[in-house]
Length: 374
Image 1 (spheres, one colour):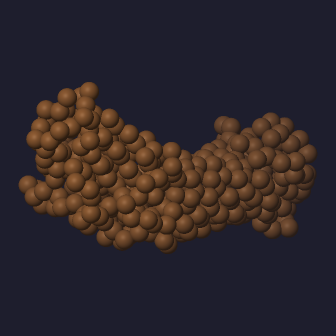
Image 2 (spheres, rainbow, N blue to C red):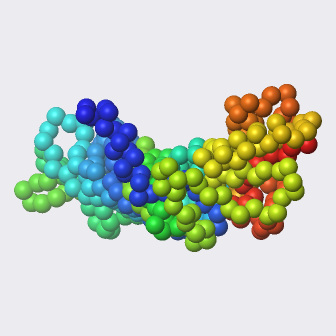
Image 3 (spheres, rainbow, N blue to C red):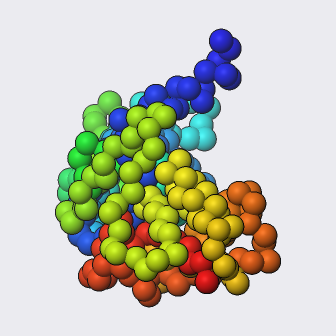
C-alpha cells in the first residue's frame, strides 16, 4: 500500500484512543504547554554615542517556550484565560559585519497575558481554535556582548538588565479530547509573540581593548525593535467540570439501542440521535421504516416531523441542529415511500425537552425527532 493510501488509515488509528466527538469546554479549566521558541533577529538602532553609527542586528538560537493558564469556557466555544509564560533564547550572531565576531548572552521574557480564544466546532474528532492575548512582560538581556577587531560591546557594568514592556500574541491550535479521561485534551499550538517597542532601552557601554586593558569609549541606552518570537508547543488542557465519557458505540452490525423514551401517544414514533449529530444509525432507520409502513395502514392527513435537541450548546446552534435532524428523518421517510407533500418538518431547538434539565446539560432523551401521524 502506498504512503498516500496509508495516511487515512494511520489517522484513524491515531484517533482511536481519543474521543469520538470533540466537546465544548464549559466551566473552569487549566492548561500547560512547552516546546521550542524561535526568536527573530532583533534590530539594535544606531547609537553614535557608543561608536555604533548604523543599525545592527542580533540573531538567536532556538530556545525554550512554555506557558501555564487558568481559564473559563462559556459552553458556546468562547473561552477566556489568564496565562503565565516564559521564553528564553541564546545569542548566536551579530551583524552585519565582515569581521569574525565572538558573541554571547541570552534574552528571556516572562510575565502575564490575558487571552480570549474561540473553539471552532466542525463536528471533527479534533477542535481547532484561534485566540489573541495582551499583557505585560519582563524582558531580560543577560550578558549581551560582541567582540571584533579590538572592540567589545558588553552589557554595562551595573550587571544584567531587565525592562518591562507591553506584549501581544496570536494563537492557533488544535485540541484532541482523550476518551479515557473526561475533560482531558492534548493540544498543539503555534503562537506569534511580540514586544511593543518603548522609549527606553538597555544601557550599553562600548570599550576599546588596548594592551593596558579595556578603555571606555561611550555609554548610552540602546533601543531594540522587532522583538518577535514564534513558538511551537505541545500541551495538556483539563476541564474541571467535564461530563462523563459517552458509552462506546455498539459493535458493527448491532443496532444501536435508543434510550427508553417517555410514554408517547399512539401514532407517534421517536428517533434518537448522538450528541451534536444529525446522522441516522441503523436503529433510527428501522423506526422510520416502521412509521412509513404504519402510515399506509391508518388514515393520515399529514405527517409531522419535529426536531429537538438537549440544552448543551447555544440556542442558535441548537435551533439549526434540530432542523437538520428533522430534515434527515423526512428524507428517510421519502426514501421509504412516503409522499414528500404529506410531510411537515419543524425544528424546536432545546425549547421542548422530554426530560427537564439544567442549562447546558446533555440529556440523551432530549436529542430526538418525533414522527406524528395525524
